[in-house]
Length: 140
Image (tube, rainbow, N blue to C red; front, side, top):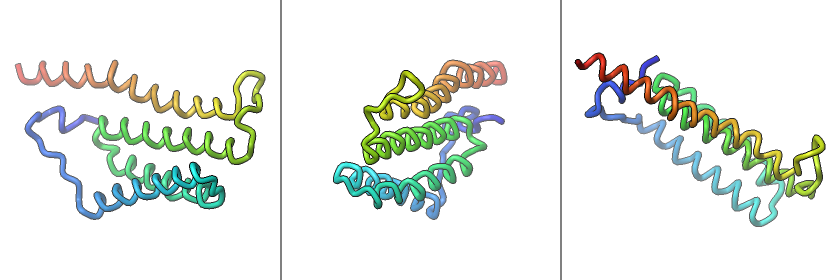
């Protein structure tokens, strides 16, 4: 897989209107989820995890051919998982309880946060430099 945007710095990344509306709706879902968390509206907050995560995964799938977009969209999906884990633990009043002998309920969210971070670290430290190097050798 190559990142077509890396091959041509003048390339324009356009998003079809129906996908852009979906991305905007994704933001609405995410905000409703987080407002529900803030307000303690447990049922709505937990219920909003499904559409928020579903749309994040759909966006990731849709951008799978553009490595930079896929990397960032997967990191967002993991961020939503982490954020949702934290929210659920708070709603269940288990955010300070110790799990697996070392992590609190809230700290369990570090697992998906770390996975998303590892995806971005891999992209920026390994994949992107390879793309730049490949671009330099093909233009010489």
